[in-house]
Length: 243
Image 1 (tube, rainbow, N blue to C red):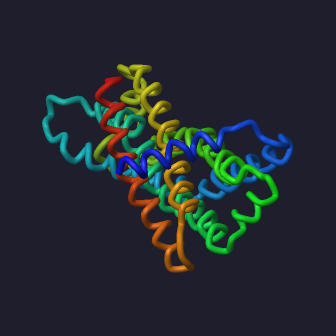
Image 2 (cartoon, one colour; image 1 turned 120 degrees about the vertical axis):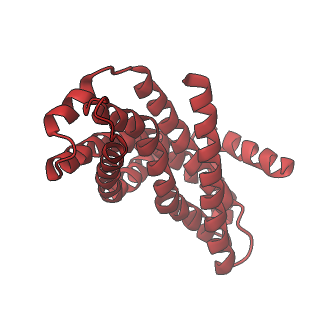
């Protein structure tokens, strides 16, 4: 474990060395941003709308007492969506969609000796292959989480409009009552850390792939599994420290 941790830290150190040619790295960053952000927008939108709707329906179902105002449904849905559902579930989905793709891409380049060719030409392979992915993940995944939060709350509104349990007026009132800005800060911190975890761990697994095409698939699987584990662990740590 300590050997893997040391290799991971050294790889990150090599990834953020001064680039040989900034324009080449900039084009790679832009390409990765499009791949991570635009490519994941559809799945994030679909998941967020349904999660917001389900959270609203389940919250309304559990509030059976007449002494509890119906407006609290909007407040609970808002807090749970911003604090947990949007950042964590989106990150777990992106670990499978984005992380496996990155690990497979870098792992294929390793087994086909393309990384060795880059190093022979004097190119900093970790910097060229990994740092653009990490920068794209740290910048685009928080933006995807913002979209997820908005669509999750919209999904809750749609659920209220489609059912008679809670009126849309009570739902909107609950969204605005008792808002604590700290939950937005916690959500942003989680999204940034999750973006770094997904891209760095999956890139590490792909970079140290050894073997053939079978090992590429295994590296992608390990990258997704470890990313999910670390996302849940960091989620616990951030929630404990900031809430």
